[in-house]
Length: 257
Length: 189
Ligand SMILES: [Zn+2]
Image (tube, rainbow over all chains, first blue to last red):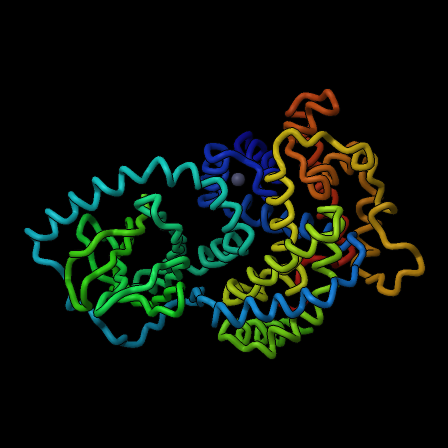
């Protein structure tokens, strides 16, 4: 009981994205196991959100509409993160890219070293990132997905070098039958020749290709299926000299911790 | 708009339908811009924030879940978070503004002759007015002022735990009031 009370005391600060990483983790760990508090948080979140109704409406300048529409047009269709249970019907499977064990072990070590170097950077970005999640309603999405037995997570990929300002978000939705990943990357530099940007994820230590990004301007998109039981522990985007490789050969430009 | 219509609208927006997006803008721009203006206090900053909000709505359209609440509530939550981030980015040193200390519901409301005064706004106003003053103050400082609980504790010379429990009790009271009035949670879900 005392635990529920302590968690609930943090509800307003949590819902407004104010808690530090440690306190937030405590709340989320409790919510993951306590349906009672989860329901309470959802209702308190609605009550808090209703305060927005108190602000008087106001007429924005006409140019705002033009700017908003132009930005959407420039970006193209939004990234879709499927929140529904992946189809139980037989899916098209494209898993021909598993790396032989020996190569995988070597690549995993290299990958892990690079990933740990980026860990500190990623932790600094974490607080801001969680606010972005909440801003996008993903927290609500996670709660809804959890109730349907779907694990949903969002990984942020950060640049490996200060030379690039690219960023990427990878959404992973999975259940016992498999799942989907969806990625959007922004601020990518133009490719040359046959080069491609390729997404890799670590599943129990083995890097697996999730495919090649579709590029439009400086934005890249990718959606792919996960095979049943697959986990995404970490991910990276490399700039490959050509498509079709089953292990990263080009430089890794973005990665998770 | 019924939940099914809102879901259809947002599916269209997620798939890149600019016409649906334009209609969504037309129906929500005043509300979004109004909240930005209330929170940021200045037209230029509000315009910037509102533009970013609509971009987030465009990017996140697929994440709208009608079972969790109305489209209006979803967009307003995105708006609030965007403005809060901007308030916080102004720096930790922003002192508590005196006008926020006694932000009574009436001062957050449009004047009587304002054209739109929704039933929902009426109800929220009544709910807020029903709270104990210290609970209302903690909530409005956090929600409209963008202040952290530590900042509030410091400004009001209160222990942090007191601020926490006031905010929590106030929020729970708000929730009970609105449930009793049948507001907030989606009725047709
Ligand atoms: Zn609990």
